[in-house]
Image (tube, rainbow, N blue to C red; front, side):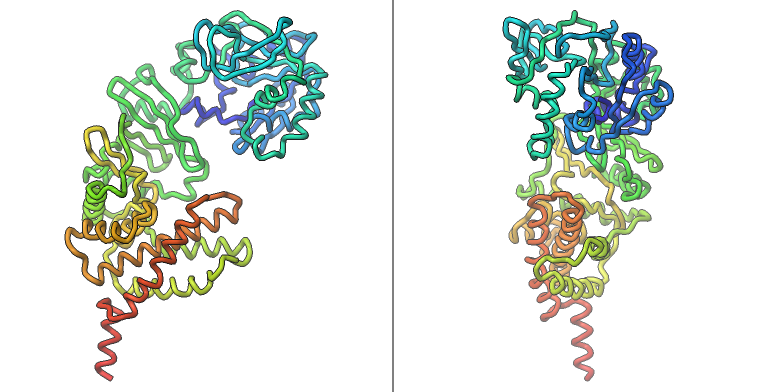
Length: 533
């Protein structure tokens, strides 16, 4: 099995699958293939998924069969066994990233078994319970002074037949998607005969973190070809040996992030997700990030690269996100927005809520007619509102455009930092206010206070309606984005309703401010024309 993301092994897994790492001079999966063949086993299938193209050479080099698991990111490893259920017989099931110091494989095995190692004292591994004959009767996550699952497994023909039948029955159940194949086994342990096969400590090696692997192979990092570690050492002026305490923080479709430490402190390495270069202007992001650092708005920034999309930031232990319902914290956020908007900094990227909404609408219509109730009527009103907003001729400036509580970090020293500048661009100054109100779900009183905090005074009628309009435009833009994501098969959850609510709540009232006795350009022009007539 070689399909998984190996997310716990960040940042090494950002560049190559764990099974292709070279440990003590040998590629992990190649070492296992060699050991299998030395035991007389040549019928070998490798199930691929994450970065599958990097494994393709194995077919020609070793004559192995390759099977691609397209569900590797959406399901657990039960999906890998599902794909090869017709090949399960007297079969070893192995993880491509294990390292066996001795050859554990045999040409003949009598009964199904799970390899195990003994833990003295407490452990967080899967601990096994057995009957007097060594048959596994239960497994629990965590225990002490126990044999625990570690390494390869052997299915005999009887076990394979029954397990394949269970997979057939349960694979399509919603609750099965996130299960390990071992979860299914333990749930049916009474009907699946499997024994414990004990091994001495040190024979079977699984590496759950980079630090664990380096303890096993001290030369691993120095000998590895890694752009990630080259970026870190160049940016920080440190050696690879100084990098430690490496673990993942976040892995998603947009970016991947991991923590690491050096003698100078703790850091976060941000690695761009696949395809993000098509969505995000990294040059604009980096320019905005440097501006934010210079203004003191984000002092976590250390270094980054526009061409490759990586970024290094300082890690803030004990930090917290901004509470958008705390008046003092909101006041500080609004001051930071004003400082950014008045900085005079510019970037090449432009961002406009209405244009973005129209783009999402065009993409949405490719999936068929938009069936949301009242959509066309609402869209026509939004177009009218946008015409008034354009007529305001409001200042355009550098905006964050993802300005809400989760992108604020408050350090243990009380310092505020506005992070994640991927959507920064030249925009109407009210973009950030609109985003904040919608994404932080401010009520009307909180909106009024926040706007006064932004200006440092009571806003004029023209300023009020312009900023309220951007609450509506932000809600409308992200509502259309949410409809598109749902049409594409993703679930945005409660946010679809939240965006829709703000889009509707601020539409008619803001139009009324513009179309009534307003003081904006459109109203002034209309009054002037009427007087002349």
